[in-house]
Length: 224
Image (tube, rainbow, N blue to C red; front, side, top):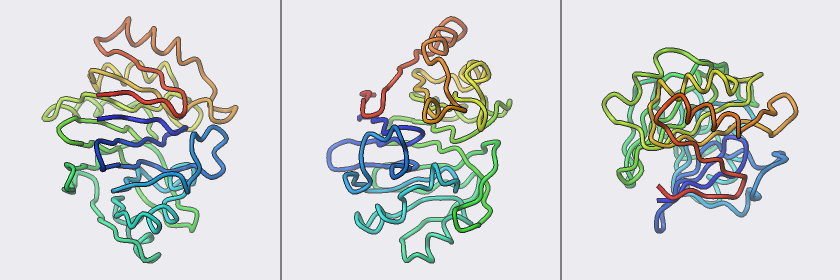
């Protein structure tokens, strides 16, 4: 399977004709690797409702006829737009033809562009037997160590930009807690407040843990 970074916290997971799209913030994203009308999806997953994650979800879901999985309050708002949704809460698992996704805690805040308050989540994803953990927007907290206990994590998609989430220093500790084989940093260098040194992050993680860090520029992909 291929993990493609589209900028900020947006990724696609794809294999054959199946594409899972995560947090499709493309319009208005200064580092986006694609326009919203260039991206297709079999399924869309959202970590939370802030505009830089919610992004183009409505337009893409309508065009692609793609169901959206998001936490209950966010899913209900999207359902009012006429979209097909599934609405788990934290700890809930939704099965799809390509695998499953489980919502796990993330320490953050969230309100949609329409004003719906919702609880942020991380996404533990089994995509065709590869376990991918998108941490969402989060601060460092000790329960990150619990997420991979039953399903060891192959790839962690990890915020490192600071200011709105944990910074690259806290993310080194998070990498140790998560224990993924591979860590791909995200949510950095999109805007000045979240500029950081991804090479220093890679060096620190690989010195302190057994994880390998793969740095992707927007548009680049990693095979897992």
